[in-house]
Length: 267
Image (cartoon, rainbow, N blue to C red; front, top):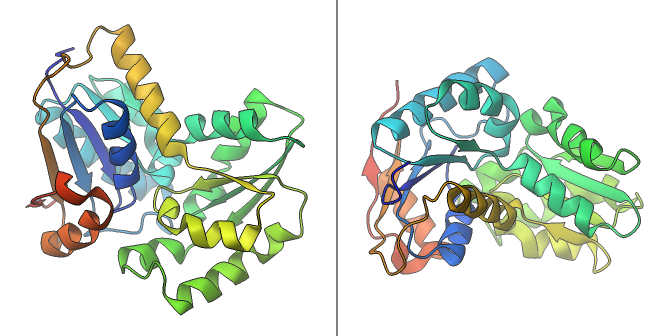
């Protein structure tokens, strides 16, 4: 593993930039190559077979670009494609579900955890399996929130329509005893203030981005593949459609780290 090679990250769109932000905060010397599959977002309603095909295409492209590790910064892709990617790619592949599950189990006080995610992630049962593998007695309640991803991709973070939809989606979970809520999609942290307001102060929100960044750091350290201290980090951002729009929206939460976006089409 080449310590000077970049970390590859991909998501269906903008959401995985929350993982990029966490990686930069934890490992500022690391170079990053991010792919947002904006031509085919959202992944949530698509079949597992389609998500695996998209994920394999992008992961293969990242390997061709010389990345040393791939972070699947998409819960749906992690749920449907992680094991296939780990078996087929020549570099380590890390997903976001297990890190999020670990953080939730460590956080819950009363043993009741909620999970919100895309239709694909919720239907896969990935979070229930991951949480119960760590803590079999935990009560897990799930809720699909399929409109959250397109709302974030549209930039409607504070829009009245988003607030109304969040109120409706989260109503069933407000009636449960959960004290911890996993934001089971990397787009959802962009709506964290709204979700927190809806759920109330007694419910802790879990953003898997920080724990995923920590796991990536542990893997690279164990392999002796961390970038040298003081190395000049370079960041490339790629979108499969509308790179100018991706740049405009992405800079809202990466600021000066994102100066340009390349266009790469995936067949």
